[in-house]
Each structure stands twice: as structure tokens, then as C-alpha cells.
Length: 249
Image (cartoon, rainbow, N blue to C red; front, side, top):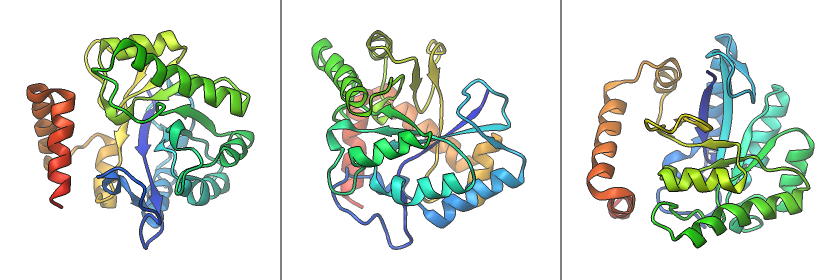
């Protein structure tokens, strides 16, 4: 199985360049030089960039969530230079806003061969939504992307990683063939693809450990705590606690 990396903002050395972001988005900001170091390490260690999700584990699939403008300004030129493709998942309601990709950006990206997918309509947590609102988040975002870009949108990245049986069933009913998540849970194998969430604070050593499966103690501890909190307080409870912690930063 291919290894799938999940990035968000790829930012210049001086920061993100805009302020209209959700609290905590900066935790996933990766500096452009660090991003290039990641991909150079992969190339030098015989990894291949692909969009084939079922290839062997020496293949890397690159994905980018949220649809920030820096993806077009910094990521796309570098990926074209090294002849690598990727998936870009956009929050449809934010297309054209300051700091986010425009419809023109997406059309260019699509034209030169990059895959565009949905990251929901408004980036709401999908678990707990009514059937009607959930279906709107999934179908309206898909319809708008397909209408504007004149292509089939077959993939979605679940916003914030919160999902359950209802969400997955609704995504499949909406017509998504590839459903990208962060942590894949037992019983969600068909059509769901787990990713490695790359953090901004990672050193190159952290990145190498994550790609090669040699997860360090700090990463394991963080994952255990995160899983426990979500199990005890549920998705919305976890998100509220996370927000309170981030507010004190």
C-alpha cells in the first residue's frame, strides 16, 4: 500500500501570510524549505511519487488539505519541477477568500494534472450533523467543484478527521470513491485511506521516522492521549478541549 502524506499550509519562512484561518491551523504549517527537504529525502531514498493509492510502500501519495493559496504559489511550482502529482482538498466555501485558492488557481492546477477533491463545504465536523446538513456538506461541495471545474470529483478528505459509519455511508452515497482520513479505524477499510499528518514542528528525523513507521515515544504518547480524549468526550468534546488549549497559547 502506498504511504499517503497529509500536508496543509506550506508557508514561507516568515509565516502564513494571512490571518483568516481557524485556530490551530499554524500547527500544521510546514516551511517551504522543510517541505523541499522532505521530498528530497524521499527521492534520494528511492521513493516514488504517485497518485496510485494501492501501489507498494515505496510509493508516496502527497495530499494537501484546506486549499490555502500558498499551495498554488509554493507547492505547485516545486511539484512541477520534480514531476510529482498530488491531491488538493479544498473547503469550497472558502474558495476565493483572502489566503485561499481561487477558482482560476484550481482550473490551472487541474489543467496541469493535479487532482482536486472536496474538503467539505464549510469544514464543519461531520459527525453529529443532521442527515440533511451532512448531505449538503458532501453533495453541494462536490456539485460546485464539478460544475466550476468541469470534471468528476471522486475524492474527499474528511474535515478535521472526525467520521463514523453515518459519515462514510453518506460520502459513498454522494459519489465519492476515495475517502481520505487521518487515522483509519477498524471496520473502515473499503474506500478509506489513512494518512500521515505532517506537523510543522517536526524535524527531518521526525519525518523519516513517520514515513518508515518508526514512530517515536512523543508521537505515540500524543496519539494515545488524543485517542483517549476522543473516546471519553466524543468528537465535539475533543474539539472543544483542543480549542481551549489552543486559546491559551
